[in-house]
Image (cartoon, rainbow, N blue to C red; front, side, top):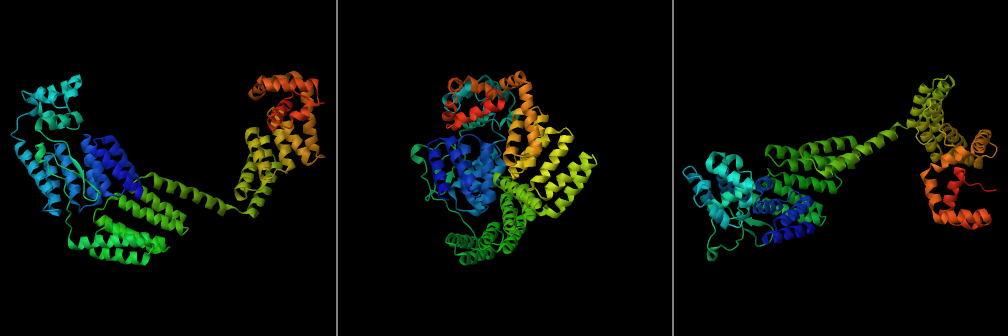
Amino acid sequence: MSQVTILKDKGNAALQENKYDDAIKYYTEAIALDNDNHVLYSNRSAAYAKSGQYDKALEDAERTVSLKSDWAKGYSRKGSALAYLGRLKESRKAYETGLQLDPNNAQLKESLSEVISQESSSSSLPNPFNSPDLLLKLRNDPRTRDYLDDPEYMKLLQELRSNPLSMGTKLQEPKILTTLSVLLGFNMMDVDGDSMGSSMDVDPPKRDPPPEEKPKPKEEVVTLTPEKQEAVAEKQKGNDSYKKKDFEAALTHYSKAVELDPTDITYLLNIAAVYFEQKEYTKCIEQCDKAIEVGRENRADFKLIAKAFTRIGNAHKKMGNLKQAKTFYEKSMSEHRTPDIKTLLSDIEQKIKEEEKKAYIDPAKAEEEKELGNQKFKDGDYASAVKHYSEAIARNPDDAKYYSNRAACYTKLGAFDLGLKDCEKCVELDPKFVKGWVRKGKILQGMQQHTKALKAYQTALGLDPNNAEANEGYRSCSVYYDSNPEEVRKRAMADPEVQSILRDPAMRLILEQMQNDPKALQDHLKNPAIAEKLQKLLESGLVAIH
């Protein structure tokens, strides 16, 4: 959590320096690390409000309230954002709710009084956009001075002057909100840190006081019922024990917190976390089920519900119940989609596929399918033979001969690319499987890739010098080169790799040395890079060694 604290402090500092975008950035990064921290959403709400992004300020304020419904400051955030959006009735309700939690909060009282005053006078107030000194006010205020140079803004002002009823549809415009705050004398939100630096405090809309009357930052006071206060204290004790890995003590404190406040889902989730650490996965799941039930009954934040489902998924994963884990990860995603849960879901789906693949392996059945494929091959039913060989591969994917057999079927069907792929897999599994190299050579010949075919036959002969098929294939390729030298040269020169080698001045010099002094070849072959290029030229048929 130290990284979260560092980011929060950076955000606080940026906000106090009026660097709103930086503040939002730091708070957002902190939220990514701890997305259940109500203080971070509260602070970001302040930053959004300062930057004129009142919709986002309201969204974060509502998130703050959902995470910490008994925190008066959250309702202060919500009331301020609503006031700036012109939703005075809702703003009043938010402030009233905050005062129910903290009846002595002077800031909330002042904000409520201001909103009630605005609400009661709003029906009798003249159209603020029809003020005779409208342009003078806007030109003299640094917040709106530059707006007057924007033709679209001037057009909008004229519309609001002539039709004040259209104001309701224009309040989403940041420039109009700022203009209204200038005309009505609202001050932009002031932000201070509390005495511990753990949260930020946003003042509600109000008129600028004289400098000497500006109130000093005050420590916030949050009033909870005695039971809830005791529950919070027990939770903190549980957290301290949890960090020390004193899980039994943590359980005792969290259980006490549940007794004191049975409506808070977080205490049950903490108990589940302890059971998870103790590898008591069944108990962990039971606690998460209770947490979800309590959360539904008390309208807990959907992200907390998602966390409970994720924890159940993690417990099932540890128990080896992969399909159940997948189900609960999907339920978590349905509550709240996050990249982390998406990754967990993808990983578990991949593991399920791997497990199913392993469970399907049966060497005995693979042999049965191979024999059926052999019979179909003899009958000339190559398509059916492919199906049987494919089933044999599924039953035993590490046996090279099944790929070789299927490659033979693909060759008969003219699907040389699929046959070549099977041959490459065959020799990858068993590099000493002569028939695989021979079959690869034949397919490459069929694809008119005689250079590569020759190399495949050479590999087969290196394993079995007396193999008749490999000898025949090698001779066939040699005859092709001997009888079609111009064709060989033409194909080689069309190869980009060959062209690159021949354009290399160093390689041209080496080829000249080899022509004048054949013994120079041995020296050049000691260099792996040169040897590789010479091998390519030999395979292309452009260079021959006698």
